[in-house]
Length: 277
Image (cartoon, rainbow, N blue to C red; front, side):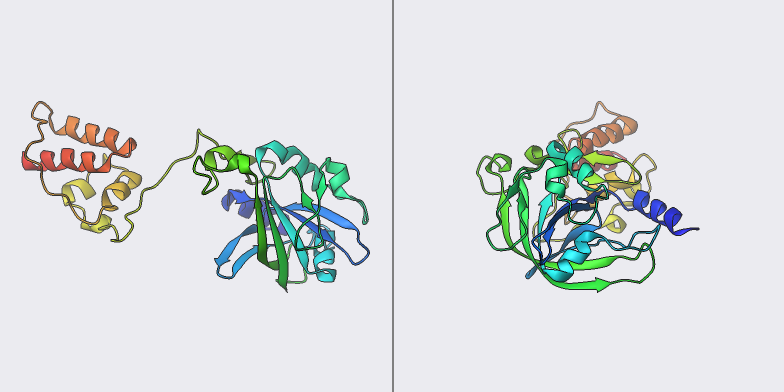
């Protein structure tokens, strides 16, 4: 398998990936702006994010972003969302050294408060960072360079906060992520969902489920996972009355309840099922 083929397979397989729109500056004051989907959060204390400008596969050259952070160890990471994704893509084009991608992509430069590179005014989330270390992963085309950054300051648009103004509202931000090839994905109302976790006690685990549930082919792994996330099997509620349902109907009703995230109710149905066996 060639390096481009391997890269393509990996990028399709490891997805979605958040997009860091990195603003950097060199010692001559020239600004660069470029997106990277090899990016994530790695620590909360200290607050560390890492992105990786890889060496170009075709000719083994390095990107202007990497050159800049080697000269000036600061970066602003602007988080990509749907409102700016086409401009973000445009900023990824390979312009000559010294060309300002802010201008090419139609973004507005906004002065940062703690670092030299400018922020993208249109971005709803901006992280001002100090570059702590750059770790080269190889010397051949396709090799990554881990740019390890400590977050010094975070700017969040008031319009994407929740009603209490205490946290970012995932329904409002419309984050965008990279997949393989030219594919992207959008986080919106249609694909947001929650997985409830018990705050103190761990779930019992699928291995602790009763065999008639665990071995029932009607249940998917996700459904078993929901049932097994409770700390213990609930006690049977003898007031429940599902006497008009047969075994198949009880199982199907439990599946409906699980789809609606009504796990305790699903348990009552399933316990009623075994009670009448």
